[in-house]
Amino acid sequence: MVMLAAGIVLLNVAIYLMMSVIYRRYHLPFLIPALTATAAVVAILLWFKIPYDTYMIGGQWINQLLGPAVVSLAYPLYKQRHVLVQNLPAILGGTIAGLLVGMFSGLLLAAGLGFSKSYVLSLLPKSITTPVAIQISDSLGGDSSLTSVFVMVAGFTGAIGGPYIIKLFRIRSEVGIGIGFGTASHALGTAKALEYGEQSVSMSSVAMTVCAVVGSVIGPLVAWLMYP
Image 1: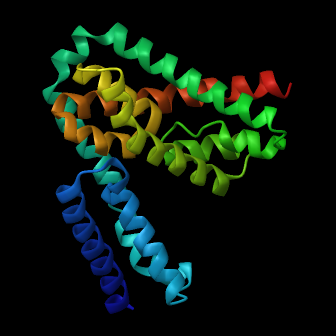
Image 2: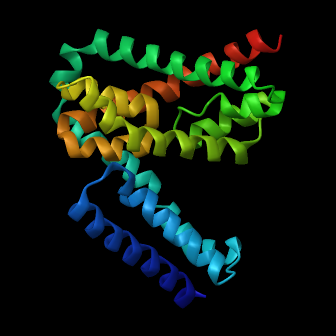
């Protein structure tokens, strides 16, 4: 069992390193390793008909590293604390505005397309990091599995489309870039923000945290307004 788990971990690491090499060579947004490595692992599982439970024997080892990875974001945030203090109103205002736009645009689109109440409530926390989004979805009566999928779609969409938007609108501010990535695509966006500098990573992690806290308060209120 231990050998199987170690083999699955090594497989993930090898695929990620290979995709990182490809990304560094071509540096196209849709080739980000988080996306291409995930697609490659899914393809391998399907090709060899490996059950999800078998994969998670090793996958849970990787899953347990998510917590320390998130905590590690505190270090660049600490180094950029003076930037946070100087720009606090803009950071909070921009993040909350982005969160509200993300929530309402998704809800209105889903309701307009005739999605059921369960689908709409599952979509509501899509712009919030996965652990918090699942808790919100469960408390509102949504489907946490669907919520996980919506969160991943939002994360990948922001990480891939973000660079094009930044270039189109000629955004130069690392603070603005970080807030955009953290608000629209949480952890995956924060990983992408790393390419724009330490300040962008710090602001993205702040935006991700603010979205989680504020979203857990606003989410139930928005759901009550739509389905009183």
